[in-house]
Length: 407
Image (cartoon, rainbow, N blue to C red; front, side):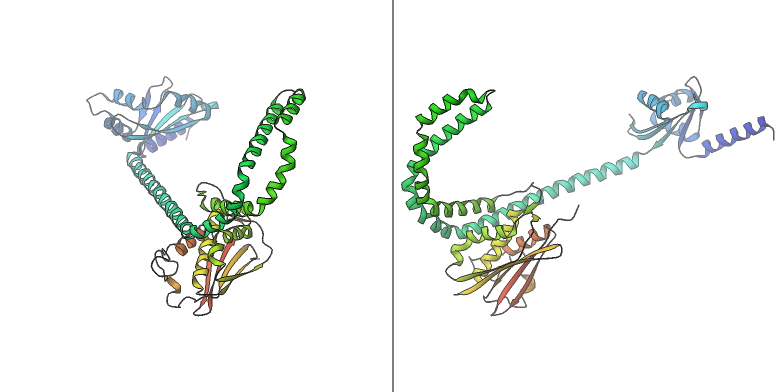
């Protein structure tokens, strides 16, 4: 076979292959016109513009689907592809190919009707968006439920907390007026120091600061303030602890990332909140082992501790013992709350984490405490283990990974 015959052979093979492919193909002449179009290209061109027109004009309209920027991109990279939406309502995947080097000047374009695929993708995207909106609504509802149960728990303890706060408030109140004046003077002095430090030359304000210090009688305040604080320290610390614990406990923290937290500190903080409900009926024993910082939402884990402590106290009829323990097993940390109360019947043990299920009398439980605790621990990739014997007591063990698994 001569060289010319070989060229003719491969040319005919190429044209046959292009004609046989189901994809619309246009081969372009050096002047940019259409040198060859296969049957799928002619049919697609007719779909784009059903008005009567000669074949050359229809193919020109098909070629006009290629964006102007596509030619520059294809000449630089050799290829460009993208989806084009037509006036006829079709979505066409366009591919532009430009030869480089010894093949420079050779170009062809492919067209593939992907309207059905595009419609499916739009439908899937709509469903995805719908599911995402539903998920956000459910997450918001869950967060509201979490907060409602949290506030309900605090509401049950409000009378006890008020009693714990009112006792020290009595003798703190007598010093409050003087302390307020001292604090105002100290704030004014701090503001003056801040202004001086923020200035270009802080040393230039030395005389001004000295005069301000004498005017506010800061030396006298520094001598008298410790005495006033000593008188109120025990009560203030008690009130501050309770208020801070309540503040941390009620904090939502919905969008915060999990951070390393001291579970023992959280347990002690929560115990401080519920102490008024426990101190008259239970002795609290503590068996704390070495604990690493655990990645979690501390306020949510504190809610779990509160629910377990309240349940332990309510399980004890008169006097009993609540034992708090913690430790580490490999990559997991655990905290347990054990009571010597009435215990849980074996036939109901499997239902205690069901929402709204409770064995408590009406008015003493919502049936959400353990259900929400279970969800919180589950969200932290942990688990709650329960052991109970009727008439002897119950132990709840919260197990959490020290480090949260990577998403």
